[in-house]
Image (cartoon, rainbow, N blue to C red; front, side, top):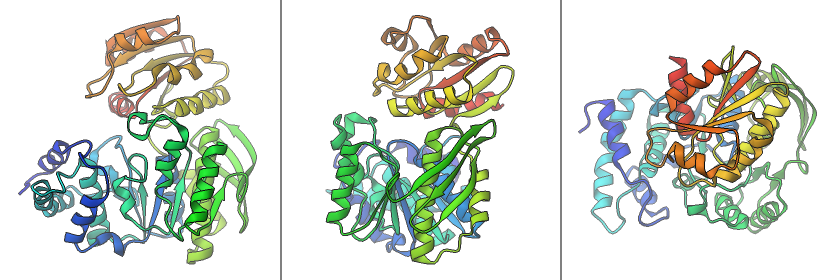
Length: 431
C-alpha cells in the first residue's frame, strides 16, 4: 500500500520504460479487471510527431469556454507529474493518484507474474488516467494524447469520437523506423473503423497512406487545404491572427498567443475536430467561445518567453521538424535580434539534422547537458555540430548564467533541444 504521493510516483517511475512484448494485450487485461472504465468515456485521440500537446490545449480551452468539463492525458510533464492527468487544466489531486495506484498495483504484479509480462510505466499511467476519468472525475470529454507512434501505443485502447494526427516527421526512429512511410503507418494505427480523421500532415506519401487507411476503415478524412483551410494570416507581438474555413462554417477574427505558423495549423486541427463534434454530436460551440478559447490557450515550453532584458525563450523542439518550425518562428517574430542558443538533447536524436535549421539565424551556440538517463554530454554535442561559433559547458546552470551575462539588450537567448531539458530550465528560471 502506498501511503504518500512521492511513494506512488516513485513506484510508477520504477516500472519498465518499454515492454518486452509490444502490443495492447496487457492494457486489455488490466482494463478488463477494472470493468473497462474507458468504455464509459467520450474521447478524442490526438497523435502526430509534433504539436500534439498544443492541439490538445486548443481543444480543451475552446470546450471549456463552451461550458464542458474536459479531461486531458498528456506527456511529458513540464512542472509536476500530476499535470499529465487533468480536468479543466487542474491536475489530479495527490490523494486520488495514491488511491488509484493502490488499485492498480496488484494488477501490475499479477501481470508481471504471468505470460503477459510486466506492464510498462506508460501503460500503467494510461490505465490510471482512464480509471480516474471513468470512475472518479467523469468529465464530458477526454482528450487523449498518443505517447509514441500510435498503432501499438497504450492509448490506442480507446474508441474515440474522432482522431487527429497533426503531422508526421522523423522522431523515435529507433522504435518507429527511419522510413517516413513506416512512421506514417505507425501513426495511422490510431485510425478506427467509422471514426473520422483530421490531419494537418502535408507530405504527399503520408496523406496517400492516411487516405487509403480511412477508405479501408470506411470513414472520412479532413485534410488541411482540402476539406478545411486557414486564411487571413498575420503575425504581431500578440501572436498569430487568422480565419478558419471548414465544410460547415467560416470562423473569422481568430487570435492565438502561441507564436508560429505551426501553431496556426495546430489550432486549425483542433477547430476541425470541434466542428465535427458540433455538427455530428450536437456540441454547442459558438463563434465567440472559439475566439475566447483560442486566445487564452497557452502550453508551457513552446516558444515561451521567460524573461525580458535579455529576452530568454524556451522551446521544447526535439526533432528536425520541430526545430524547423522553431527557426521559422524566430525569423518571423525576431528578425532583427542576434540569437545565442543553449542546446541540450537526448542520445537517440540526429543532432546535425536538428541543428541545421538554426545555423543561418544564430550568432553563437553553447552546448550543455542535464541530469537525465539518455542526455548526451556537452562535449559530444560540441564535437557533432558543424557550426563554427560554438562552445560547451557541462553544467547547464552555469551555461545559462554565463550566456545571459554576456548578451546585450538587443540579443536573444534561446534554450532548446529537449522537452525534458526545457522543463528543468523553466523551473530554474522561474524560481
